[in-house]
Image (cartoon, rainbow, N blue to C red):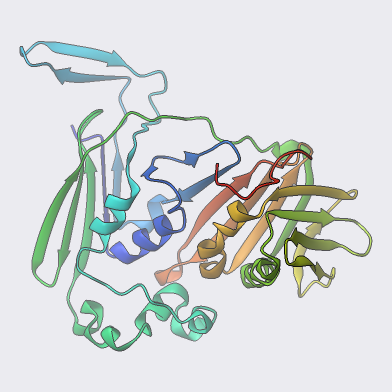
Length: 315
């Protein structure tokens, strides 16, 4: 029995969501590092059909034909790694364009992400969706240790790819204490995107986020070799949809890591900014897809200690 199968009528949507966490060579349920992690939620609603049949034990035949039984500690979860770069290349094997008009992505008249892709340039005139060709992406995973099979069908052409799977290197996600939040703010993602890019002018190594129940309510600031800069947000409901900050909180993060979430910031319609009492920061982006569906990308960042982050070298 196949462990997992899923069918999507658009490889583009899966591609765009996974591209948001394209800061690692391999991808699993989450790709985590010491100071940050990124999680793309490909929920059941993203697929036209979805089947997952977990078992408490998996069987695999060895070279001599005998059967080996491996017990899973958690029968409800299957975790494996694959090459993210190879997966992205596979999903765009038919050569669809990724170029986007950011202003179009903000215009609901053009269908959000999908609409912006449809206006992506001259090549959009030859988009298979415009030509009426059916596009299907099928994913399947037979059992632990087996390859991930990807079947792409478009315009009468079928391509089958089998990707090698790996044992997960790290299954520990950065914990966020949801019952001990120091701040929770919901706002338009485009405003956070603009603020982060505005601060880039100082070539910063650090990003400081300060939130307070009194003015100034939310301030993003940076310091770098070219000077310092700050972006301040008022508490206006039209600007900050949700603002829950019981007391003043200030934490500093590595700017380059937060900047790595820019693709998700640009694509998303809203962002939920949460921080716990330990300073762990969560940026959860809501991305609107075709058909009225939504998906989420969650980034988490560990705050820097005073002596950390003085250089801009990657971790």
